[in-house]
Every structure is written in C-alpha cells, then in structure tokens.
Image (cartoon, rainbow, N blue to C red; front, top):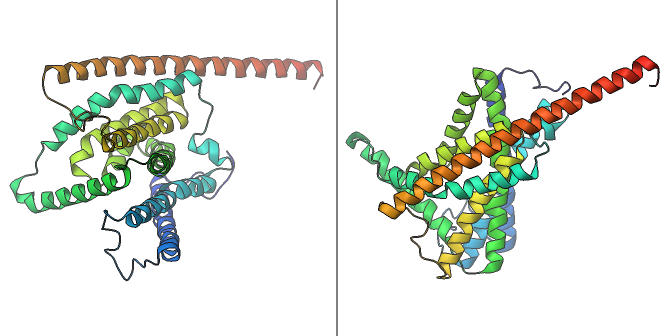
Length: 328
C-alpha cells in the first residue's frame, strides 16, 4: 500500500492517534457549527448553553440538526479519511471501499430488516436490567441521559413533514452510517485484529466501543449485538459497503417508523416487543431468517473471493506466458 507515517505503526499507537485526530476534528467541526448557528439564528452557545433545549421551537430543532451534521462529520467522516491517508497511499482501499456484489448488498440490507424483532427483544431485555443499589446514583444519570437523547430524537424525527424526513435521513441515517462504519469497522477492526491476532476479538471489541460511544445504557445490548453483526458483514464481504448499507437501512427504517407514527399512520407499539406468544413467534422467525441470510452472505462472499483469486491467478499465468514468449 505504500509508505505513510502510520503504515506500520504499533496498533495501540494507531488507536491513540485515531482518537486524537477525532477529538481535534470534532472540536473544529463543532466550532464551525457554532459559527453557522450564530450567522443564521444569532445564537451563541458559549453564552447561552440552554439555547438548544426548547424542542417545541422549530428553530431549535433546525439548529440541533445542523449541530448533528457537524458532529458526525467531525467525529467520524473526516477523522477516518484523515487517518486512512496517513496510513496508506490508497485511503479508499484502506478503509475497505472495495467492490461488493449486488446480491451481497441486498442481503446485507435484508438481514437488518429481518433482525428487527431480535433487536427489539434485546432492547426489551436491556430495559429490564438495573444496576446494583450501590450504583443507583449512576443509574439515575444513565436514565437522565437516555431521556434527553429520546426527547431530542423525537423532536428531530417525530415530525410529519416529508422534507424534514429527507433531511433527517441524510443527517441521521446516511452520514452516521458512512462515518461510524469507516471508524468502527473500516479502521478499528483491522487495528484490533493486528493487535490481538484474532478477527473475532476485533469484531466484538469494535462492537463494544460502538455501543459504548452512544452513552445509552438502556440500549447498550441491542446496539452491541448490532455492532457485532455489522462487523461480521465487513469481515465476510471484505467490503465496507456491506455494513454501511445495513447501518443505513437500520437508521432509515427507524426514522421512517417515527415519521409514520407522528402522522398517526401506524401504532407506536409497532417498534416494540410484546412478550406474548405472537411476539416470541416473530422473534423465532426473525432468528431463522437472519441465520439463513448470514449463511447466504458467507457462502457467496467466499465463492466470489475464490473466483476472484482464480481469475487473478489465471491472469498472472497468462501474463507470465506472454513474458516468456517475448510479447510484452
């Protein structure tokens, strides 16, 4: 891949440098966002820290969208590209932007849709967990953070405007899917794999950090398992496009459901788990469907890889024969 400052660096050093780059970039990015807020709405967050808390105000909702855009850009997208360029002459290939078969892309989207009942049951299980009594104060902090995040999400996504939905899909589905996958799958899995020598440990470590980064205790388990599934999609397909597509579908579906709930088109209970017979039956069907799709993805990814290797070998042999015959 060529020589770059961090091409052969120690994986622990790579992780530290990546975190420092992300910290610096998000700081600069949020300052740019603050500048835009000041220019468009005359709001200075340094002087008025509660300016973004009135979610009943449409201007406040718009400002939160702007800051989310700059946050995702500065925390994930820009640092990932910057680090990849410091590590390889081909930063796109370094991040895993390789060809993906259409059937694998479609299966990656379908596996997330099929996994929704499983994700919901994990969320239901996670919500029932409680920290020990000695950590009750910490649990109150987690509950407060969860409530704040939920209010913000509902304020931004829980509107009946089609134009707002399109903007939300860009800011809250496409950009996070692109940036988070480049960081947690495209960069962290190779770093952890090099560090531990085990791809499975790398996948689960990156999934843990992916879930912990959201600072939502009551959604930690489903997000942790989702991160692991996205990690394995990356490992199986050898392309970052597979987890990006799956991540985007997951986020976009959530936004569309909230949009439809806000319009009263569907029940608010649709995206939740009901522990009755039909609920568990749906979970069982989900598990079977996810298993089948995973088998399909691994089978065809392996077959495509073997075919590509055979084609490359054949091409190499043909070029070697031409060399021997003096045609090149």
